[in-house]
Structure formats: structure tokens, C-alpha cells
Amino acid sequence: MLLDASLSQLVLVDYQARLMPAIFEGESVVQNAVRLGKLARLFEVPVFGTEHNPSKLGENVPDIRALCQRTLPKMHFSGVEEGLGEWLRVPAKAPQGNARSLPKHLQKPAAAAEERNTIVIAGCEAHVCLLQTALDLLEDEFEVWVVTDACGSRTERNRDAAFDRLAGAGAELVTTEMVAFEWLRTAEHPAFPEVLALVR
Image (cartoon, rainbow, N blue to C red; front, side, top):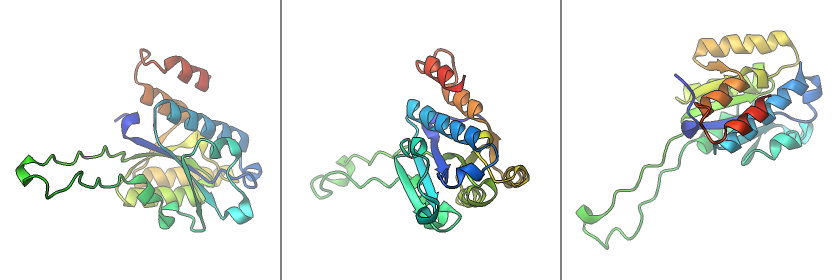
């Protein structure tokens, strides 16, 4: 099973300016998160961010915040506890026109909005906010793909323990380049040169 950009959404969890200096390989983690956000823009994949306790930890680093359509401030470790799941669900379309104006058999059925049930997710700390958000998304029946090289914790051991647990719970573990080339699918895609420039 490969990622499909048309069915994907990207969630970037808690890349906060005051937290990132303490994160193991934090600079590389942020660079990959920015790459993911730029890739999402190329493929018209919606991007959402979360910020844990922003009054204490500050906002996400500016490059990441600028790539997010919306950013959810939260106090729970899981963004799902504070409404992230509702952001990711396609709202039901209201019927168009006046229902009384035409007999039922002449009314057009409402077009079903395309569900984007595949959540590509990355963030910090991998063993706390990222882990709890991803587990809650799995419980809510989303497909969850964790981008390992864009995730971080203060220690390598905690980060890797999170990956083990997420894989055991049914999340797919991928890298930034895997996401890029699966969204792309072919070297004939018009975005191919831009994707190459981003991953090199």
C-alpha cells in the first residue's frame, strides 16, 4: 500500500521554538518537517499544526507555522483530545437549493466530499504528544503514517520506543523521502523537479 496525495492530510505536532533546542538531532528534525510542509503544498495536501501549552513553550518555529493552514493550541498531550480529529474529518455537505422547490426524484443528490482519511504525521516529542495523538487517530479509524526522520524526543531511546509502539499499534513508519516519492509516483509528474530539489 502506497501513500496517495489526494487522500492525505499532514499534521505537524509541536515544533516549538523553546522545545527544539532540547530535541535529539533537532535541527534535522525541523528541516524534514519543513520539507514535508513544502511537499504538501506542492501536492495540495492540507497541513495542520499543533502547539502544546504555547504560553510556556512558545509557538512553532516560524518556517513550520507558515506552512500550516491552521494551528491548534492545546494542553492535552493528544491533539485529538482538543478537537484535531474534527479538523481532519470532511464536513458533511448541506443540501443545495430549496428542498421544496423540486419533487424529490428531480433533486440532485449532494456530491460526497472526498475523504482524506490518511494522516501523515510527524512531531515532538515523539514519545509523548506525537505518540498520544497518533494512537488516538488510529483509534478514530484514520490511517496513520509516522514520518520518522521528522520526529524527535530529547533522547534517542524515547524516540525509538515511540516508533516501536506506534508500529505495533498499526501505524506505518516512513521517511520524508518515502512520502515525497509516494505522493509523486512517477518521474513524469509535473512536480518532479521541485520534489527533487526539496529532497536533495
